[in-house]
Image (cartoon, rainbow, N blue to C red):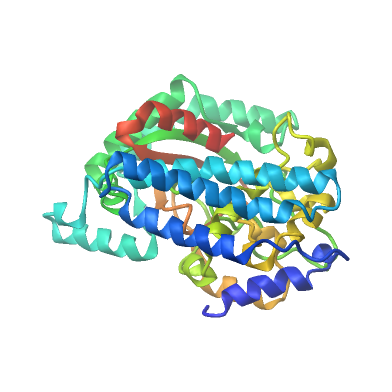
Length: 404
């Protein structure tokens, strides 16, 4: 695992779908170092400085980010490359502002809040491995299945009608979802999951978003759009989430085996990647470039769902980034089959196989994960978003954006 960052770099250089004649852009190493230094400083002292000092630090950090991208912009060879760099800079600025708001909030919870030794042990472990496996109470599972029954029948009707896009097999809003969200908050409060996540984030957490998802073999949204090998990589859809503020949970409402889409996680991979702050920031948002209806790159890219690298033009633009900044949070699709990176990832993979009611709570931004890759049968699951209770209204809007 120590060499994972090197394996990632070699993977892109060696991958035939990522080989192009153009050399990478030369961004200012001084500006990159300045940004990384300022970012780490702001993250460390966000809750301790006065408001006017914090505002100044944030503006300096945003200015440093702008200078990084400006240093490479003059080297772009055409309008599409310039559009890529400009749009990426905008996405990074948006994500950075969200993160700075998060780092500014004082911690309201800590490990000392736990009087129960077992709960404290779980909280300490979560700090290290960033995930927790659990099981719903029998009554909690029964209530959730009852609430989901009507909506699930709609999703199965979509399957029968041949509507198999991921958005056709997921429902994330409405009266039923609100009822499920309230039921989950009661369940997770009683079982201590909210306290566990509160100790990890330092905030009082609540379930703010829920999506009921049906996975079936006929739906192939997760299949690799990059061809050229005898088989796809065994890491399809492995990814890190964009947000650093919203832990997640995946809850099975049906029995899940090896064959019907178990959720997998890859402990310690995030740490082994040894990402710099700017590299990580770019990786979490780069897939958004060209997604907006107003983007001049939307039609040029014509991406497949969640797979930015399905576009050759996008891959060409991505490889123009300097090696030190090159990262894609949804890199599971990009892995070379039978390569070193695939082997390293598979060694760390943990699959969640179990009966209905089995769940994992985790930090999706710092725990590589995937799920829903079906071979047979069906999988019924809830995807859950947790947020700081002090920002409940904004958090609900963010949760909806995450799902869509």
